Amino acid sequence: MYKYYIIVIIIVFGAQTANAQQETPSNFHDPRWSPDGSKIVFYSEISGNFDIYVMNADGSGLKQLTFDASYDGMPDWTPDAKHISFASNRDGDFEIYVMRLDGDNQQQLTHNEELDGTHRWSPDGTLIAFEGRRGDQTDIYVMDADGSNLKQVTNDEGNDFAPSWMPDNQHIVFHSSRDGSYQLYKTDLEGAEVIKITDNGSHNITASVTKNGEKIAYISYKTDTPQLYIMNNDNTERQLTNSSEEKMRAEISPDGQKILFNTITKSGDHTKYNIWVINIDGTGKKNLTANF
View (cartoon, rainbow, N blue to C red):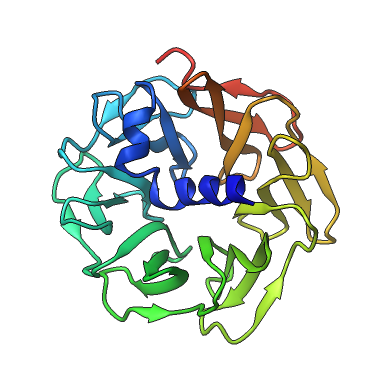
């Protein structure tokens, strides 16, 4: 259980500074497709510090967007493709910020005393769902696009992570430890009805939903090494990867044809994170950051 908990915390809060110091240069984390699928935003310490970067969908055209001495990570695109949001500890704890595509006009959206991390914009661009840690508990919160009208959605003794929107703009998928192991759940924006999506003894984390709501990609610990899976509406599923690297973070492309994911490769005292893409049928797997 300890192993899984550490992995989840890395996903949520970006492997805070102590972890960053232990990693080798040029790691690549938390990839997100642009709304048209032509670009990918992620964070990396290529420059020696964790900052936000963007590249073309084929791995070319790398561009650095933030240059702050703080830890910038966990990015997302606004649905209109005009801005990129991210989390940063530049005010002493992790808060959510938004900026233009060129990195200018950075504005702070949250002002809480603890950690606000992984977040996703609603399909219509009016809301942001995010995970927030208050004390020893992490829950899902929702706020307006300008950071106003903050509302807590989940409130469970288990920890709730990695929100992802359903296409109806009214429901959120997340993973939670509330029943012992990490499983996928769906809730409405009031948190009144929480539905369990996966129900097995293995950990299932970081869901991504297709725009038509018919498929969910996620990472599962059913085998010795975490692998990427795709699930249909009828709960039938398919394992898409079967390699020795640990998998984390699943992200379906806007057209529903490809999936981004991270791999973790450990060698001695070093840990290497790369960004991969794979077709939704499991073919065409490619390491996009192998040459950086």
